[in-house]
Image (cartoon, rainbow over all chains, first blue to last red; front, side, top):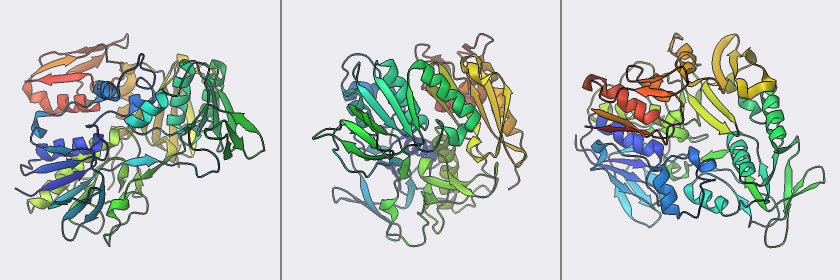
Length: 406
Length: 62
């Protein structure tokens, strides 16, 4: 097979896609195009170890700490970095780069991931941060000083991780969250409120039920104005208010559904095409572990799982074979480290309508808590806080045992 | 196949022990123990374990 496969996106999903194309037997040329100037790197440390790494490392030194090793099988894959793709023409098999250069392809992997949503509010821009890329991390590192007043907007997992890291760096940290307790959409209210009490006891302030309406200050942010008329003093603002899928570069192609990422079938083949697959955060696909509703899943495990499936699908189609009809039912998982707590999640707790605290005392989270999440009495998710690592297999195994009805 | 785990990086997430339980195990103290020279028949599982390591501490050689 000499078909040229272009992978757009050079983060975890793009790297795994290239590796899995080789593993699936594709021997033709593969080009990975990345918008960032860095080779594939691991993002979770950006809100934790990298954000707090001591000294004054250069961006390249920071990158070296988190760069992914590449399998030997992708030694001949062309990683072209710092080259955003602005347009894909599926009909003609042509990408257009921001530089104006055209790149021809026979098949395409969409691995463009997400970008942070930003607040569109009046006031100065300087001093406002988001965290997705290594360069974002470098910028935020430079702003977190002992005694800095940091306001984190959004108490999701990234917001809470940044708050925890900033606190450990000696900053004075306030988290603003309109919706409810921290990470409540995933954890449910009882556990989320327990986490809030835990974090408050450690020194993070929470302002719950309020939302920002503007920023004060002259050339730099000096405060965050809230909807109740109060203002929080701020030297640094971190906007952790969710993400948007990077799909605009595919917009010119009729037949695709780009309403929330790239709509795919269970094989990761984009609806309406036979030469485009999607992987990672940008792929919206049904997982028969739960139901037949296509969803994007912003978990760290998803790029690796979807890359394997998508590569098998694309390689089969290019070889004139039928893709594997067996249902693809990955168990989503992620972790989060915040202060002295490690959260480990399996499945999709966010789908649940009922939470059962199985083990532990929510008022003593560091000692270990296990919560199981149910939807219409079916177990759909698990969250462990500070449980021993030896129990991970058993907790994840509960999902492997579920009958998959595709 | 030779396996090395950078124990300075390892944070005992235990994901490798899910992917390749014949090779990686979390002991009762919550620490990783692993085979350094597993049978080549386990390569797929070991590669998967290296892939899913949150801190990318697993190095496979040979």
